[in-house]
Amino acid sequence: MSEHRAIVSWTRTSADFTYDNYNRDHVWRVPGGADIPASAAPDYRGTAERIDPEQALVAALSSCHMLTFLAICARKRIVIDSYEDDASGVMTPNAKGKLFVSHCTLRPRIVWGGPAPSAAEIEALHHRSHEECFIANSVLTEIAVEPQT
Image 1 (tube, one colour):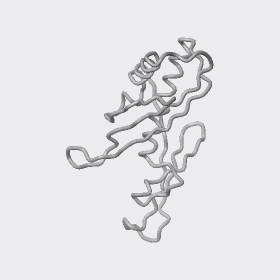
Image 2 (cartoon, rainbow, N blue to C red):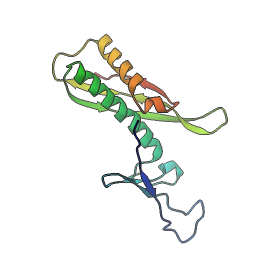
Image 3 (cartoon, helix red, strand yellow):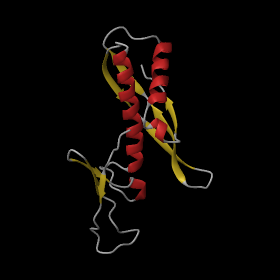
């Protein structure tokens, strides 16, 4: 078992506090001193140059899948030189009409450091990575993996 912490800090910078005027910019601070500038999504009056919570969820799913995939491959002595994922998430209304990230697609592009596994072996590696991914096991979002060549 492990615990993971973050401090989320926001301060009003607008003269008044109305939905149209208050600032959405804030900071995520994680142990070790990393500050991550965050905001709401631009559609919700946020700053596009900052990460928003929905992007962070997609990035966390992608990152966890990748780290799990790399660990599995390393244990199997399958060498990887690089891994890049063009991940995306889609928000849709749930049964109660509330928006949620309902689907996330991971599109990993892998450069192998030796002979590439077969397509079936790659699919099995991604399946196992998904099954063991901590973040995927923490959410209800449907996650698809579409390996890119």
